[in-house]
Image 1 (cartoon, protein in one colour):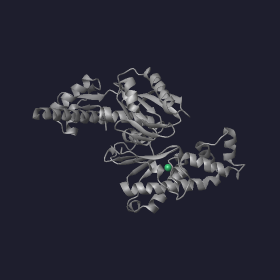
Image 2 (cartoon, rainbow, N blue to C red):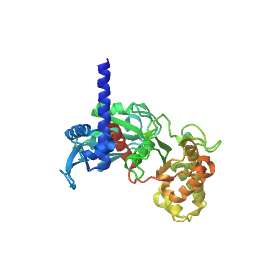
Image 3 (cartoon, rainbow, N blue to C red):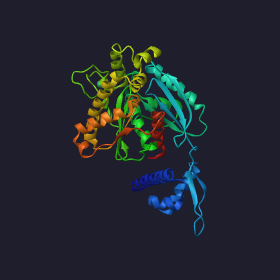
Image 4 (cartoon, rainbow, N blue to C red):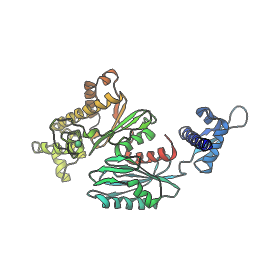
Length: 397
Ligand SMILES: [Zn+2]
């Protein structure tokens, strides 16, 4: 028994060392073995052994040498970004998107399929069709499939507990995909995916504490504490906290949730109601051109000077500020980044949110939290699904 335990401990240590060395190469390449040993506090022998293993797997390679004043120039090793491919999915919007990425999160190929109105098994079939198509563009060993999904996710077993729009309830999505493709499958929700993207690839990468809040059709937060994302079921669901007593009925069954006043749908509906009083506005022109209003049209009309929309931006900022003040009260003045379609209102919205948070939170008065927009553009959920695979399959952060 003792022998078995010792062997298990050795395996854990070996795995830990391998991840430490790989992470150091990922962050500092090209780098010499001696420098890796210095940064990781591992012995030169351990570093050399780990590197030969990684070279055997094709993930690391020798990439030249540097000349020094004396002695034999040390050989540098580097990360082989194309040694593996990763398949990432964003299922959280009305169009399902998929991409093939390399180990540096560079997009190599992408595809999408309209999913508006698809539900249950039909929606799942559509996902499988998308993945089948993407598989044709994989030319390296595939690390796995990472997914940013909507709704409440049980991250451990990879189950979609509740995604109302897709009518997915307790769907074992990871198991279903694993049965078909025989690959590691990892899924988180769209908010958590956005957080992981910023944490691995964003401007504030490697911060130990970070909150990313999506404000779009839904509202929710991905939360990172001490370098680890919070995956408790329902963590970060700030969109379904009451901010208007006795307010409008919400999709969750409650009344006056943040989503009923600050989501893109709520904003568009309110703008629509104001429209009849402003028949010659920019918004009226855009509505006539497009046939129907969407959040982009509301933002464009407001940016073009439709000042009757000002109270909407004012109120959305105030309600988001109320919810974020609670986040700051619990987590302290951490860095908070916002993403999603509603953030198109830009810096006037941010200023309103910051003012409200500072007005309402003692913590924020002691130390002002940094509230900004995310640093990544393009499809942050897809990139987050890639980061998720790098975290769980490579131990890269
Ligand atoms: Zn709700």
